[in-house]
Length: 77
Image (cartoon, rainbow, N blue to C red; front, top):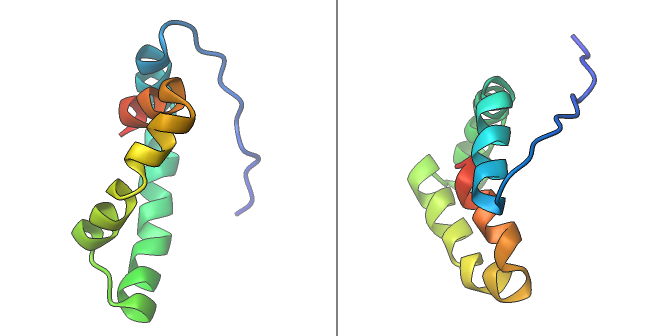
């Protein structure tokens, strides 16, 4: 069933905003993992741990480009 992507207004530090967003979107994050993880495993042979390890490779680059964005990402996680 189609459901529009909600827009959440959050305030605070980058980390606080990420945490708030992660809390508000927890059900959507879980559903996304439910949908994509089997594809990652089937098509690329990546477990959740392996996908997370690959994503961590980009953390320093993201932090160098925008430290606040990386704080939000870490807050969401």
